[in-house]
Each structure stands twice: as C-alpha cells, then as structure tokens.
Length: 310
Picture: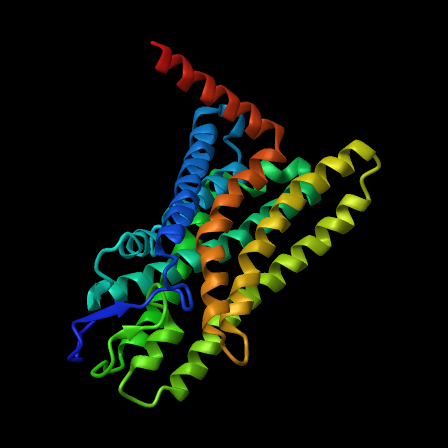
C-alpha cells in the first residue's frame, strides 16, 4: 500500500475525558490484559493436553482462544505504553497495521461464532452423523475460511481508509487507529467512503448474526423434541454459553459502528470492553459452564503445581 500523504506518524490522544486518570487506567487495563492472556492460554493448554477435548466444538473454541489472545494485543500494548507516561506517537505503518489486524481478528471471530453455531446445530440436529458431517477436513476448511474472509474484509476496509491523503492534523482522538477517527483526519471528502464503510462494517456482522439466529432457531426446535429432561438441559447449557459470548461480541459492533450520532466517550468505553473484557470473559463463560473443560483445566493446573514443587 503506497503512502502518498505527508503525515509520517499520528498522535493517539487516548480515551476522551480521562485526563489525570492514567495511573488508574494503566493498572486496570493491565490487569484485564494479563487475565485475558492467562485465561485463554489455560483454555488452549486444557484442550491441547486432553484427548477427550479433541472434538470439532473444542477445535473451534481453541481457535477462538487464539483470536482472543491476539485481538486485545492489537491495541492494548500501545495503550499501556503511553498510559505509563511514554510517547503517544504511532507511525503511519503502525496505524495501518493496527486498523488491519483489529478488523482482521474481529471479522475472523465474527465468522468463527457463525461456524460454531453451525457446529452446535449439526451436533444437536444430527447427533449420529455428527462426526461424519464435521470431519477433520471440514473443520479445517471452515477454520481457514473464517481467517480467509476476515482477511478480505480487513484488507478492503484498510485500503478504503488509507487510500485517502493525510496531510493535516495528526491527533487521533481515540486510543487506537480505527476507521471513524481516521476518516476525520483525511484531507478529502469522506462522505462516500463513510457510507461504503458503514454498509460494509454493518452488513458483515448482520449477515453472520442472521445465520446464527437461523441456526439457533433450528437448535431450539430440535432440543424441544428431546424426550429426556437431562438431555434437554445439557443441550441448552452448551448453547447458552455460546449465545452469551455472541451477545458480548456483537453488541459492541452495533453500538460503535451503527449508531447515527457517534459519541466518542461512549465509543471508547464500549471499545475497551470489546477489546479487553469480552476476550477475558470468554474462557470463564466456556470453562465454568463446561465440566469437561473444568476437569482438563484442573489436571493442567495440578501438573503445573507438581512441576513447581520439583
């Protein structure tokens, strides 16, 4: 991507209306970030180390944990760096990278939630054919597909944003480089691009959400046909964790990108929750409601404690 602008770096202004709170925010966000990395690494260790969890559902959960490790890492290290009193400057290339990887990982997770909904639909609707339908090959194709289409979406949005000339103000009124704040700094008319970006950012999660709702309508119908009360309870328990994670992931997108009159402070607050809190909660949502994951986690922690004693 050719940089035709005279701007070589931007200044991240941070979260609006949080002056003199840098130390408090640094401690709070660092705690969130550490818990996010630790929780998702534990989920990865539990799934990889237990052969009982080598199933399609946990394969996709494993990829979700990988995304939840990298997703907050796009913006959090730089934010913590300047909250600690260091420079707020970010290079042009760094800004491009932030925007690309933020949307790449965000879109990948969005597609991944859709694939996980399909996986639950197949498991509950066709339990006897589940292993045939969700074969290793199919799972690999679906997993690679989420990253492939996430990359296409992110490339389109990044090209759309940085094809503009940036030759004037350098102050990004946000804590990382994102589409709405970057378009405000462009030295050109951005109204048409804003509309294209609005449609693109809105259409993708809306399509995924409609597919997820369709899957869960079929899932609920199938669950209600299960005669066993215990079977219905187990099915609802597994799906409720997925639905909770979906709501936590999709609601920020609606609030940030599809609101008619943007509110910088609200957007930054919701974005922090989306970047740090949701990835931190995903391991808790899936592990605390799942006996197999809790059992594997307990074994991993016992092994770690045993090695430390040696």
